[in-house]
Length: 186
Image (cartoon, rainbow, N blue to C red; front, side, top):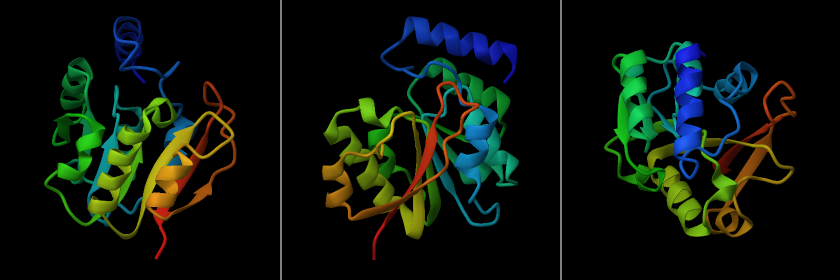
């Protein structure tokens, strides 16, 4: 991460703590785990909560063309930085709860940098329902969490019939994190 990206992140964290709730940008190790199963030729990817672009950089680092990545971010300063740093990237300034409305289909995965556990159940439901409408059968919703439990509430997991796999703990992230890959069963 460039020092100017870190400065932007910290400035937005202080000015808009309701929008930026992470303590620090995602580490390289966390980003690598988030994108480990992406296929650069596998079709579009939706990224939620793109921030300053650490996970975006990892997504594009897989070889996925920028035009195949749809990054959703609410913060206008972050949107401007994403457009500046990643030419060709589809940047959508909108709520992740509206991701099901994007005009993109047959998505291979949704990669989320959102603080999902801090969100109300209805917003989680909207986000995961959008995932279910956009991702092809067998596609994943990839989400990291700092805590010991799955980052999607039990009621939403049950409503959408979600199964999951989790990574080992990524100790070199601040704070340490784990990546979950959710998929609709059946």
